Image 1: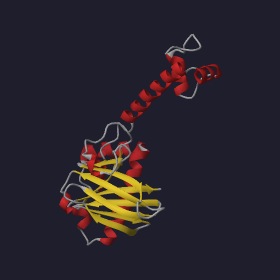
Image 2 (image 1 turned 90 degrees about the vertical axis):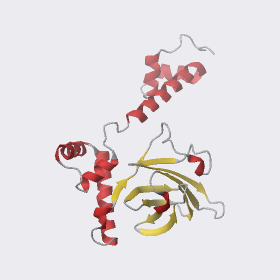
Image 3 (image 1 turned 45 degrees about the vertical axis):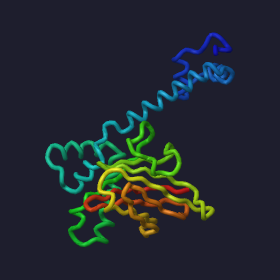
Image 4 (image 1 turned 120 degrees about the vertical axis):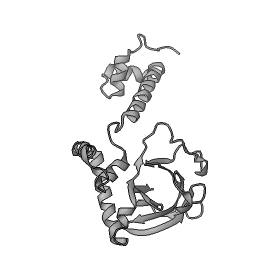
Length: 234
């Protein structure tokens, strides 16, 4: 394939188009030239991949934020984390979510148990390579699953229309990392328990017949709890 309106656009003009700054002449050319539009789409894919790789590149692991809040980290490491969170809205939001969750956890559990349970906020992986998970346990091909990680725990979630109840959805999950036999899943909405399930020996779980809305999902093990604070079911 060749440019149908030579001369073909140069890379500077294509990059301007990808960034939304193209001139009317460039936009008109691309509307009529599949060859140059294909080159622009290739550049857009490259740019999207770079954004994924650079997304929150300087942010510390979520578990370090949790350890800082629980007082496990001190000294220079704590000072560096506090300096980062002073300027990073993403990490401040995760700390606020952790604080809110610790407050609710302390209210429902016996005194002192919060100190014995490591609480992590799961971080959504936005595209890029998978987490090395055996996603065969998730219905479908796995490409559309939401992928989360928190410490050594990895979680894939796929939300599909219920086969038995029109208008409702089923959540299929696969957990990787940790002692599967001791893990349970809880789904809450506005602080109220909606559904719960045990994680089976290979890491699978299912939550069925759920209404659309925003939920909080928690994965609880013997000494760690992973929280997905905003799981949206449509």
